[in-house]
Amino acid sequence: MRSRSRVQWPFMPPSRVVAVVPDSPAAELGLAIGDELLSVNGEQLRDVIRYQLQTDEEEVALEIRRGGIEQTVQISKAPGTPLGLELDSAVFDRVRTCDNHCPFCFIYQLPKGMRKSLYLKDDDYRLSFLYGNFTTLTRFTEADFERVVTEHLSPMYVSIHATDLEVRAQLLRNRRGATSLRWLELLLEEGIEIHGQIVVCPGINDGDILDDTLRGILDRFSGLKTLGVVPLGLSAHSNEPSMRPHTREEAERVLDIVGEWQSIYRAVLGHHMVDASDEYYLMAQRSLPDLAHYGECLQHENGIGMIATLHAEVAAALRGEAFDGTGPKSGFFAWVDGAPAQGYRAPRENQVNRKSTIRSAAATNLAPDRGPESAISGARTVRIVTGEFGAQALAPVLPALRDFAEREIELLPIRNAFFGGTIGVTGLLTSADVAAAIRDVPNGDRIMIPDVMLSRGKFLDGGTVAGLDRIVEVVATNGAALVEAVCR
Image 1 (cartoon, helix red, strand yellow):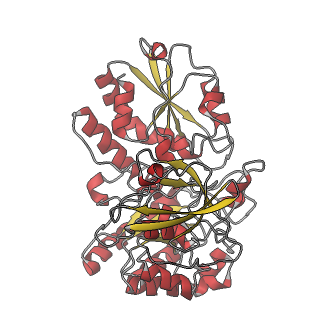
Image 2: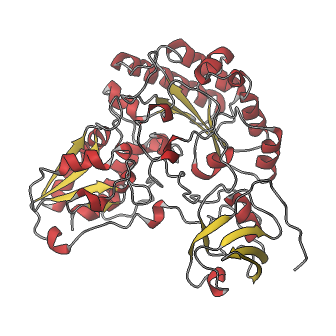
Image 3: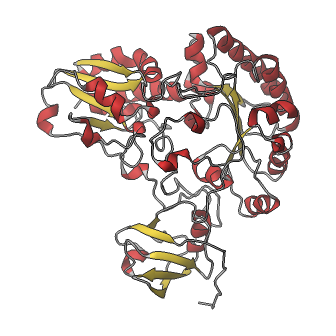
């Protein structure tokens, strides 16, 4: 191997090994949990993206520190073979924080007393690429642009909110909000796949402003892969008097505007691009489109096509058919606390679209916690714990589940007392709310919760399943897993 000098970055902390895959090249060379990774092939790495690029090589030189002693380890392997290390963070240098002050930002609406890391606002393009986090591009730079294009960090996810410059700057409370969308144009010109988002705030960027935004996107950003229109989420801890929930009439208007532009986009672009979130259909009390409407369902994690996907998964499982669903990858706030990247998305030489060997935190915690078999066999009723929106999503498939499983199945919808406000999604329920809801469930009934409530085995308030004081089954958040679980 040729000699390389280490690329130095100031104040760069080393990444730490938290797991080693058995029988991997790293395991064969004796790398262990707790080893500190100082450099790879002479480069002091800034993030897991560079780690993956460097470790894809046939020969890899790792500079590690163990017990205060530095050493270099040489690894020879087939090009692209996973190295077999899981690191403690996706971003080794400091996460790029957000300097916007959006009145609808959910971080500002968190109650006090949660884990400190949950209050960190990021606007880091790397987390957009790795996790699907939406970035506003207000802190994006020429150097960032060069890296994204050179390494083809695609897809990325961009919050647009409005194309009117004054309205966008007002929503972001940042003067760069009026100019940062130029990066979106440049990224699209370079062939970077971009998924856009509009968070609609009643009285600010809905109605005619939303209509104008969808017109502006067709004019300036027609190369977007998808565009999601979603409502703001309001907790009881919001201090913004201008932020309020949608009325049913406003939700209907949003759906009407989106529907009009869906037709225009198809006529002009020749393909489907824009969709409203499932939550709008629930608020407007309208029937949701079927799964075929959403195509590849690429904004599933943004709550778009999620209900249709669940219904299709359940229907396929009831027929005994396999279904390649699009279940959630991890819980809310999954990237914080050093959660490893979901996967390295960029195509690389001889390995187009190969997933990263860095396993997601969620993937290591999704095995159902079924509890003692004695608690499952002979149970009278299955009770599925869910949020208020989740209950509306599951209600249509409940009769078919009961018939198929030949047992009583009930939903246990929980109002989110921890966050309050309009927060009704299942993934934001906490252990305190769940514990209170299941306290009076009759003994002998089975209690199921979806894994989307958990990140690395913990609820958002830091509680665990073990702390609920009841036997609870954790079920993967997809229709097939649900059907299998209720039939046990």
